[in-house]
Amino acid sequence: MADSDTTTTDTTTSSTVPRSTWANRRRMAYVALASMIVFTGLFMYTVPVEKISKIGDVIQWFYMAMSGIILGYMGQTGWAAVAMSRNK
Image (cartoon, rainbow, N blue to C red):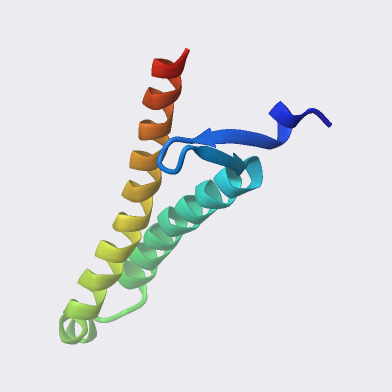
C-alpha cells in the first residue's frame, strides 16, 4: 500500500494523520446527527409534554453537545481543504 493511501496532511499540527482518523471523525459526526434525529422523533411521539418540560435543560445541553461535534467536524474538514488547496 502506498504512503499516500494511508495518510493525509493535518493542517493544525503539520504532520500526517491516518485516513482512519478522518473516517472516525466523520463517523462520530454522523452518529451525532443520527442521534439528534432519533432523539427528536422519540420525544415528539413517545414522551408526554409534561415530562419534556421538566427535563428541558438536559434536552438543550444534548442538542448543543451534538451540534458542537457536527460543527467541529465540518470546520476541521473545511480548514483542511482550504489549507491543502493553498499548498498546491
